[in-house]
Image (cartoon, rainbow, N blue to C red; front, side):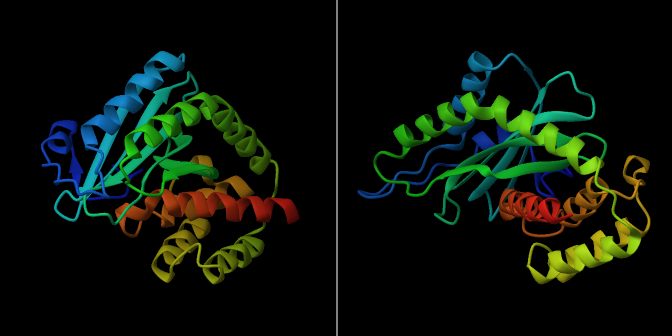
Length: 239
């Protein structure tokens, strides 16, 4: 489960087996199974793509759950990815994000604008979540097409070896990368682990960054990828 960057790989049955905590007068946990089930049913009735794979991870003894559903769009280099996260200990806001999954390296491309959360698990959280899912799934085709366009645009921007080091340093300074993640990114930029990313361009550099982002807390992976995407957009604007 490299895209989710977790060693705590679980299957759907294990996710569903986690006991749902008791609600309070002001807090309503959304059961993992209800959230995933509604997301999958909405995708099935609203999009023309088949579900290709679903991957899940958990942490904090099952109190945090995150998953990625990948859809077969017919593009063997990129699939549409829908991420979902939820927690039973109030540590993570229930949220979903739409983007692309790069099959060659199992990296995720999540647009910050496409990352939406239900900020409070109040008594209306289930209604709010369903509205969020409906809106995001309806917009998912546009999000995915934007990511494809951005991929092609980044491939057209040449980046020298020295310039790549400079931009990775900026990512570290902007806290898009931690020192540990930056070490991975710098190594990948010096010697590409996938030949598809050997060309010296902005797309290759982006994938060095996302490779580094696999190091870190699984619960924040969606936030990290969204932050990297927004950072790359600022770089692309001045490249």
